[in-house]
Amino acid sequence: MEMHEAPTRLRRKPSWLINRVSARAHRLIGATMTAVGGHAFHFAILAALDEFGPDSQVKIGLRCGIDQSDMHTMLNELAEQGYVERTSDPADRRRNLITLTAAGRRRLEELDTTLTGVQHDILAALSATERDKLTVLLTRILD
Image (cartoon, rainbow, N blue to C red; front, side, top):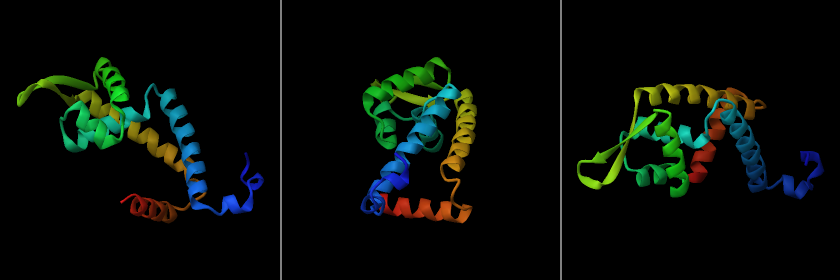
């Protein structure tokens, strides 16, 4: 549906607009990540490991908002590609620690560059200043 086809009252609701932008972003990011052999969850997991260091599957999933069944699948993919390693947690042998590899760090940089490009496409109608302000406002809503 084109924007002008939606009822005016609907177009004036920020929640409706946010949902529309989110759906568009999801489609573009999904298509772009598929084209480079990745997944948006791959980026989230690698970014969490880069920023916070080795952690359990459960903690990474909670930190990134990824369901545990999806986490299992994503970690298997990342491990098969050599981007993460699973090792026994010395503090609790029943638990694995997930660690970012050097290849994973390089892959994170590639995915970050790719996603930055998609962000520019999604927000093309906004200036750099407006993009920064939008990020601040959306963050405030979520805090």
